[in-house]
Image 1 (cartoon, rainbow, N blue to C red):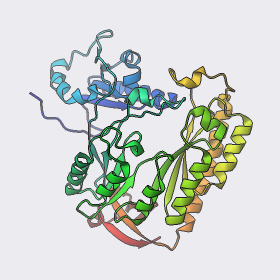
Image 2: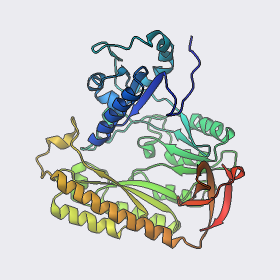
Image 3: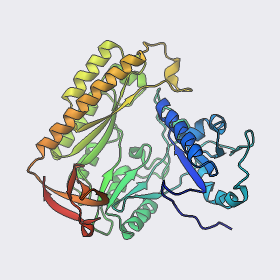
Image 4: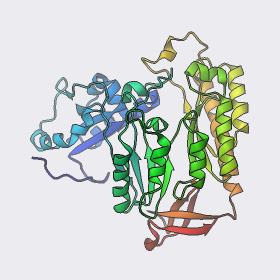
Amino acid sequence: MLRAHQRVSLNEIPDVCVVNTCSVTDAADHKDRQTINQLHRKYPDAIIIVTGCYAQLQPEQISKIPGVDYVLGQNEKYDIPALIDEVEMRRGEKMQEGKIRVAAIREVDDFHGVHSADDRTRCFIKVQDGCNYFCTYCTIPYARGKSRNPKIEDVIKDAQVALDQGAKELIITGVNIGDFGRSTSEQFIDLLRAFDLLNGDYRVRISSCEPNLLTDEIIDFVANSKHFAPHFHIPLQSGSNEVLAIMKRRYTRELFAERVQHIRKVMPHAFIGVDCMVGVRGETQECWEDYLSFIKELDVSQLHVFTYSERANTRMLELDLYVVPKAERQRRSKILHEVSEKKTRDFYARHLGRKSVVLWESKKEGDQMSGFTDNYIKVYGPYKKEKINTFEDILL
């Protein structure tokens, strides 16, 4: 029988700690290990369950970390509720080294739909999982499996439940959401149309979409929809066509620029976030300068910068190419962060004096509260409890 359980705050002493890991970079793996070690030191009697991408890729490595009791892959993490029953039996008899429970981790092939509330205002709706792209630098297809998704009708049921429970903002998430429909013979644009027909006072954001899948039809739909926010997050990864080819990306920088230009044409005030990677193998000084020149001219709002790190079992390691020294990777990363800060300041400045709508959130910061406009500008105002989870017209 499953015992009652509840989430506790960081100041309380938990019976169980669940670490849902990321493995997108070596730095992510390092942070995962740090988190596990910190939890074990702080809560030595707690059962520690490690799951997620790092657990899927490196279960034996994780099992050697002191304090870890269970290692579960992407499929197996849905067994966590059943493990709670074992907690009371095992408290006071923590497993010794060599007796760690490592699940028989198999290839990821299931889809588990979920909607996850964050704050009182927003809810993340998972619509897709996995990826079929196998970019040369990336481990995600190995950690998350092939691209797959539920039917539109099932996603919409989850979304309507979230709205009925009080959410005001829905975020469509997944690993490669533009690939939605691969396993159900549906299309991403049809999913978006269905989201626009939900019942309630709400808005919707698209979390991230590959540029080759972000069609003009989708952009035009968002521009004219009743509920979709003028907010896009688009992975670029490199502004050099030579490096994009090395990465096995499915677009050129010219196509990327066309997408940005079309968004600006139909939604001049849209927020456009961009994923950028620096220091990959083959990014020569000439490629880097080409990349930097391109990104400086691109009319986007913010850069999300990743520094390349070698990942085991990726095809990039098989390529005999120029290896960017780590110090140079960090230097290039710093430059792109500076470019990003300037772009964000310029984006905010363009909106001063413009009317907008903010959705106020519950977090109190001193005597202030904060919220985001539809185009993702964070604003602050005097804290008023009655405003939490409400829309308000404002002047920026």
